[in-house]
Image (cartoon, rainbow, N blue to C red):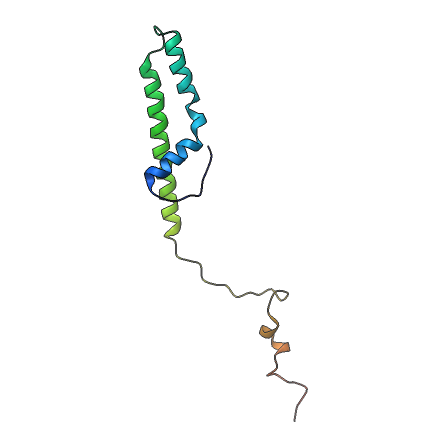
Length: 107
């Protein structure tokens, strides 16, 4: 199943996701063609059941992803952490390179 990071109104995103996952409807189209070839054995409502299940699956999947996204956005932001790596610290933050601490002038 293809994934997208687009956001917007639910119905427009549902149509966009149906368009992305249109290949999942291939068995329904095969059933519809077989209905016209062998109408005694393949009924037309088999196709409706398949397309309805596909649509229901897409709606439930979008609701699950929407809920996960809402849950992830509700988490509080992490507080900033002090950088302890001496190789990536700014030179002004290092105590031995500070201009205020002149240890050479001891008068």
